[in-house]
Image 1: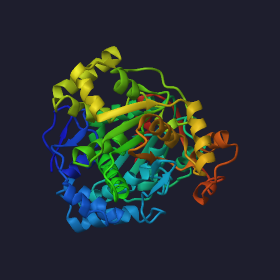
Image 2 (image 1 turned 120 degrees about the vertical axis):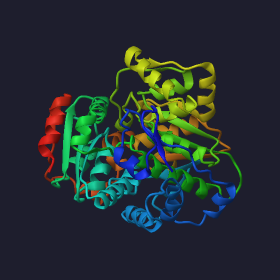
Image 3 (image 1 turned 45 degrees about the vertical axis):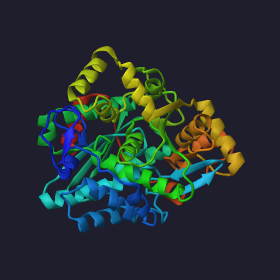
Image 4 (image 1 turned 180 degrees about the vertical axis):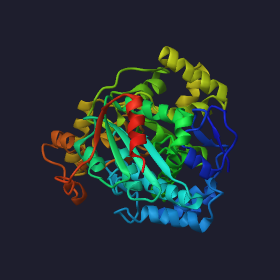
Length: 461
């Protein structure tokens, strides 16, 4: 299996080199040259596998440069830290199947990928006797999950940028209370998009990237997306044991990574009827799907802050396929976005988009109403992001179909919003309660690329 760039400027590379490269050196995103195909017979044969066993079956089809036993060990270690024996269990509530992705160390779906990626980095670095300086941007959950995935690991430093005051208090504490010597938090006076732009600029400076051995943990890293593909297969296998109803997934998403993993699963042959893209007021992706309008707008702060994004990094991967693997079209599209603040699409392209996706935007009032009503009806507590997905599914998807909604975070991570919605505090797990009063370490700075560069250079061990 070889990996290529969406912008066509690199020679095909191996899986391990793709992991270490992160962002392609031509500024594009890495993708496999082709997707392995899974037959219905193979799918049915996977029904009794544990989550780590299923992860090995899927991930190993994309990896041919790590021995099978070593890869299996990496996967097993990655999911041994999860608090639920199924890793990503599926529960049924009020006509919706909820895929719980929050049983990892930081109580968010990012743990599913970043525990694996942290172990993968450590394995490759030890094999090559190299060091890595990870730089990433977060709107809330990626940062803490990445930090906990690599804290204390040999050969790795990590620098995470987050928008000052624009994550939830729990998200901020999960990052800044990790004071291991190899962990560095940077709170940026600005938005997530400012953070993401600076990280992309660091990786776009090829001399700086090479000199300081930069690596990526954001979902621009293909291994992140690959690890997330697994739970679409796992959920599908859980809910289709009886009957053959069409299966829909509702995915609350801001950066397009989580839903792109579902798109990959579908391309591999998983029988997904359609992927529902659920957004909040920062609805560039919903405007794209429903109106063909991919144009930039200001970022609105909401009760679902991990979705407060305008420029979705992983959208480029989908564009590459939408443009029939034409890299020149991808380059032209992002040139248009830089110059005009938008990307335009043909009628035929939009027909294909709507075959792949449907979409809905849920505002803050609707989000809080959904948390409250769902709790009163079922006793089940949703976090604000999951509530966006549930509301979208209830409004948009046929009631006689199988509707699976991705639950991306534990409600305790967004306690203020939950309390506003139900009139009582969310139950707080011990892992969250223990954060209060811990020492913190964080550097606050303006959204200036040179200052970030100086800080990274000064703190490389």
